[in-house]
Image 1 (cartoon, rainbow, N blue to C red):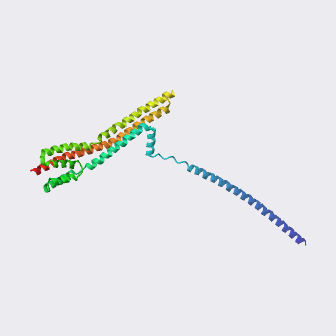
Image 2: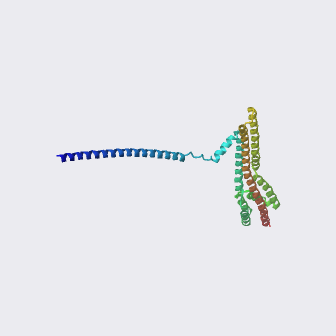
Image 3: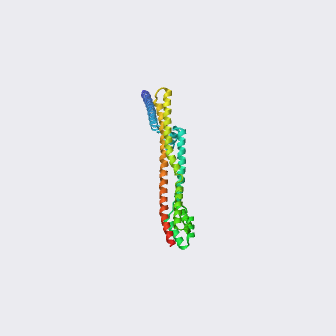
Length: 275
């Protein structure tokens, strides 16, 4: 009996001790788990903050792209004032219209004089003057028109033919040069308008200074800026039109030289046929 009581006592003590150990371990484990969870939450918060900071630094606003050239041109045109800038723009439009018309006309007036001379000579030798006149009539350009006038006066003699060619050559040269004086006018007037706008802009700047009673850099800079913009646009217009004008002049010189050279060869062909 005593042994049984002693065994039960030892069993109870062991069970109580084991429960105490397990409870203490569970408590420590819960504490460690809570600490781990708190550490994890802290780490997550720090990581989130770092990621947000990096994202904010990465997603900085991009610098504005440079404005297109036509937008800058439009802004400067408006800043220069609608008065004189509009007149300068009108000079550019009219000058370009005349230049394009002349360029098209001169290109259409260009012909192969060597080919035309061969065709005329062949027609005279084989079919006569009327066939040569028909060829010249169906060929565009001042050279063919001059040949036609010479062939039309063929029956009146070579002297009359030569005079007719010279006279009609002057008429054709005048037609080629038609409109160039207006282009030259716009070339001259565009920078003049720009300079006039400069003077008026400076006068406006001094008027503002007088009204304010003090020299303000902002007022002076604005007036000078407007004044110089009109000059710049006037010079740009003059430069553009000058390029087209020189092209037209060079084209006219080339056509006139062809007219003169081919006319001499044409007279020689008629003289040979006359014999």
